[in-house]
Amino acid sequence: MKTISTHLSYFLKDREVKRNLSILLRYVAVLVAVIAVFTVVFHFIMLYVEGKEHSWITGLYWTLTVMSTLGFGDITFQSDIGRLFSVFVLLSGIVMLLIVLPFAFIRFFYAPWLESQIQNRAPRALPPGTSGHVILTDYDTIAQGVVRRLERDEIPYVVLEPDPVTAANLQMDGIQVVTGEIDSKETYEAVHADQARFVLANHDDQTNTNITLTVREVAPDVPIATTADADDSQDILELSGATRVLPIRRWLGEQLATRVTAQYGEVHPIGQYRDLRFAELPVHHTSLEHQTIREARLRERTGATVVGIWERGALRPVQANTPLAPMSVLVMAGTTEQLRTLNRTVVSDDPHTEPVLVIGGGRVGGAAVQALHERGVPVHLVEQKQARCNLLRPYCDEVFCGDAAEYTLVKEAGIETAPSVLLTTHDDATNIHLASYCRRLNTEMRVVSRITHERNLEAIHRAGADFVLSYATLGIDAVYAALQGRRLVVLGEGVDLFTRAVPASLRGTTLAESHIGEQTGLNVVALEHGDTFKTDLVGDTTLPSDGHLVLIGSDDQMETFVEHYG
Image (cartoon, rainbow, N blue to C red; front, side, top):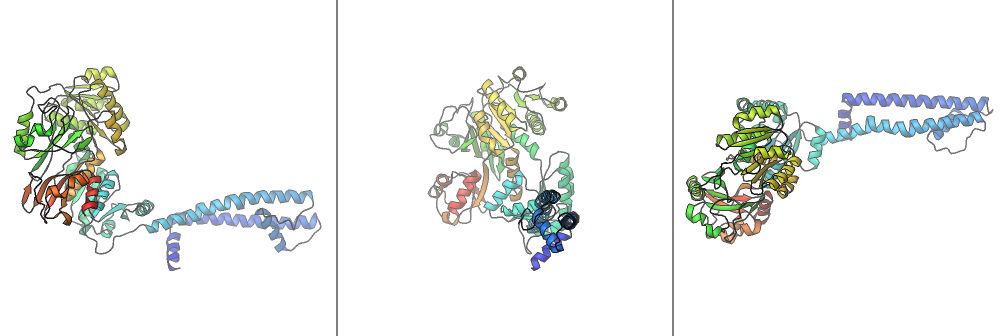
């Protein structure tokens, strides 16, 4: 009873609820007045038309039975006037009692009451003593992926949601959530921001600035990472107190630019973890074509290790007899000097000098064009908007303003001779169409594309794309790298770099005895042990009890690792 009275008291304090109840009560008053009038008219007709006399209780009884359509039939009119009056009362009752009254009750009382109940379910604060948690200020596509990884790694977190109803729904879905205004100091005090491990501000730039300043009032020392859409916002966010600024869209363009083939046989660096560097090596037009991994002897010749092979969007495990097809792309790991040696070993004597074709000159496409320009790679741009064409013209050899679906335009832009095409439009359907279109026009070119929705990944690879990366995937990788305090390593869509303490079940065993690759599909690329960082792993390498494994694979593979080894 105390809980009900508390909820009712909170419910009745709402201004809109008071207005709704006032409307409902006015309607009930009208309904009572109509019933009273019908009761009086019943007595008048019965007395002066039919010559019968009934009590006032009987008149009220007749009115209610007729209006509610029960119509017991024990009291009826015999005259035409009386029967016409009965029909009128009956129709009025159908409208006022059976239609309008239930609707008004549900609309003005019951629905708001249920909504209030749902709102009251959303937590307003975290339990006292909460610490070491991650605070996410918006449950967008990036936060959803981050939450999955936090749950897998058993790191506590909380999502902030201003709308209590949305917060309650998230809670019912199993998401740890607190409702409160994201720009309110009280909200961050309620979630113990001063004891948090990490805060992510993932709204627009202006809101992120406000969030950062507000958090700094409560927690001066907590690490804060913010996303940034505009390059000009980076300095503002840093001045506001952000520890890490993540310009995801610019990074997406730059990451896609590193995946294009501009010179045959060139090694493309893609990331670094401690002293271990990662790079991609397209096989096409190198001495490695049609050889096997064993025949290539890259590790013996350069010291670098092949950790995987990209083939049309899938990272394949490495086997000694794996053939290197022309469209294969090797993922290499090694030191800076080892990768330089690799580049000297396989670089083509006759590099391709045809321009790379970039389709789409938005934020992502513009970042890709500028990144290619800085590398000295010739670029042809196809873009529909004249303003973007003018803005990016200084970074391109030629700019073609028009629709990329027009064959004459893309032919003039060099689609038939370009070593790579980069698709950067924000629409997945357009990119899928263009991937298929470009693949038909040039079967040997490398097709690199962005996507928005993960569900379209398989479709765009079937259309002909060789490498695909999405905003969400890059954002998730960037946030988790910031959380772990390491450099961003982007291997590709659905593939990431993981670090994991050696499980108790594997301590003291050798790498070969662990069967990690066979059981999970993950590739162990390095082993951390104290101050040592070992990259030249062999089957006899022992896994120490206090060591950490550095692995490459997908989130599903890592979940399998956790389930299998603990």
